[in-house]
Length: 250
Image 1: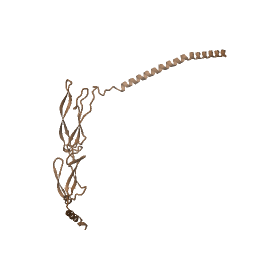
Image 2: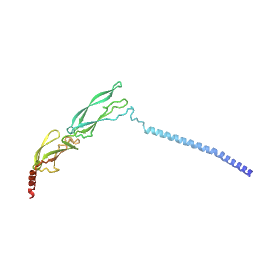
Image 3: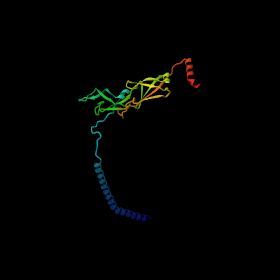
Image 4: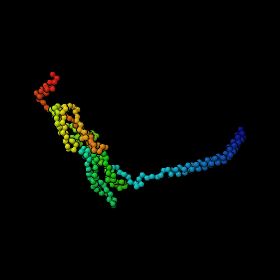
């Protein structure tokens, strides 16, 4: 058993040695060839990719100076309805940081002029580029004004139209009347009403509203709403009123 084992062991050892000896050159050649082919292919592929990128994707710089733009300085610009309807010139004084020629930071006054155009609405933004604070290593900041509407004592704005509420006594509401209606800008208009002014009664004056920015020279309408003021009556007056109002029903 031991001799058989040793023979088998020798045979197996030789067989393995032969197969390794025979296979080693061919395997090494295959690996060598494959590596050389793969290396050449990869090199060629990288070469093509590099040359393709170089031709099709030029290098670009979004900010060659290295300076950044700080956020805009925002400030409200309060305007009356008259200014927004007819236009106006507003001068605003600002104080900003400025850099001198020798690199010092100082405060300086600046007066900015805003030309308010007829028909502007609240939220309109007006930007002055580079008129804000100066800081080393950055571009000068912008200054942005945002239009805000002042509350008017008489009129309420609804887009291009205006609303006005007029209070009249009950006797005029029932018998008709002549009233003077204020207009935006200080003028007045006489209005004759021959009808009974009932709840929900309204009058419209064409072209007496706000300026229409998209239609030069045109204005919206003025909507007049009426508020009837009831008098304080004595018991006898109430009795008389009841009799008068019920006469037609008898």
